[in-house]
Image (cartoon, rainbow, N blue to C red; front, top):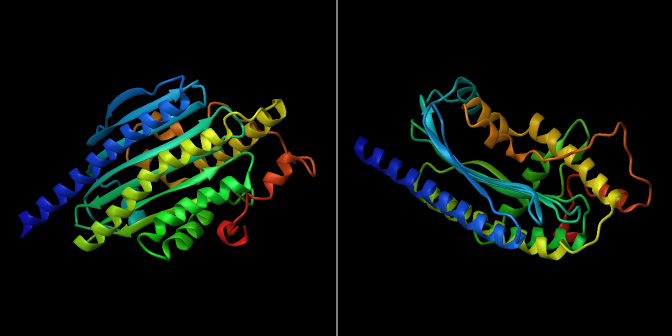
Length: 309
């Protein structure tokens, strides 16, 4: 029985990590086609405690000013901070996932983030997590409705309660308390969904693959929708201002950043989410009635995009 459990665990690890690696390659291909100017660099890295990953970065593209599509599969002794956070005494862990952040050049093309991940402990407990969220500097209602509609369609294929539950969790998670505002217009976020039984694993594995496969077509559509909008220095400065909020969230509150650093991950890969440029201006408030002020009103929790529009 013990050998069967070990074989099952090994097969799940290989199944998930191999698919995630293929997902990284497919997303890179589609983003390179959409950008049309630059390509992603490739860097393989190893983690001293076990495992490693592939970092794919693009800089100075035609559309993408800076973007990262990272894959990792790491394992080893469970660090004390992780034991405390997960309330476990399990001595070993395995974690694999794909993490993406794209910072576009044009202020009207939104920042996007996706993460899909699988975590397993040596005591047999396992779970999935992930999600997609959008951070536009300028909020176009039709884009927001379309984006959330796509997320709901995927969620509804698996559970009619998933979208509302995971949207609410995204609103709560991607929130900046010291600013009293959200990072963007949210999306879906799920974490630590148990995958201990074969039925749980199969359901959540199918769901996570559906979320991962949604990323590229959704973002390529948003790129093409907004890439030809003309912008000025005013628009760029507002984009840099909104990027500063992105930095504050990722460095102060993001659990993935903390996990990567606490498990001795590759620092450059962990911090690839930071934009190439950002701007801080003390007590800045956009002019009343401006495009910037109109977008600012959307950076709050609880907007029901699919009910009120």
